[in-house]
Image 1 (tube, rainbow, N blue to C red):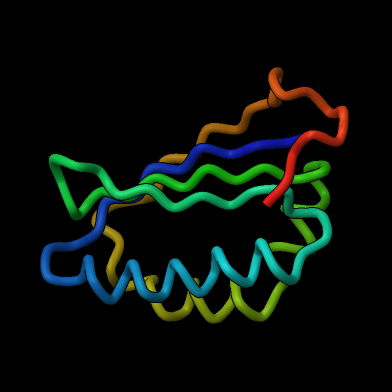
Image 2 (tube, rainbow, N blue to C red):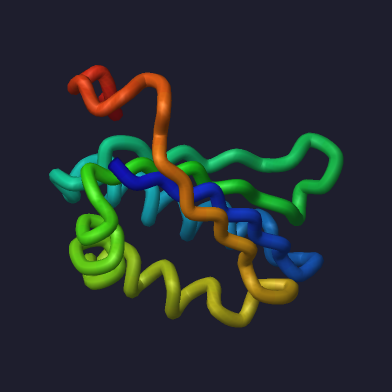
Length: 106
């Protein structure tokens, strides 16, 4: 399994439209990508211009190919590209618990 934790800073004045676009990507990932096991969108309580994504995939290829080429992702990326306040920070991880025992679900 493969997981990502992404921190995104949004330019002031774009949080609401960024969240709307991001929810579309998350729903597309969860509903239309067999290799996507989880896609969570979290908004920071103390800074509404900071968003965290927690994504879990069956394997790295499911993220690199299936996700990054999916229509909902390419639409999201082109929609939000000018709203980033700096580069998103991505941490690649391997889930430990729950393990790869089929207990992950959307």
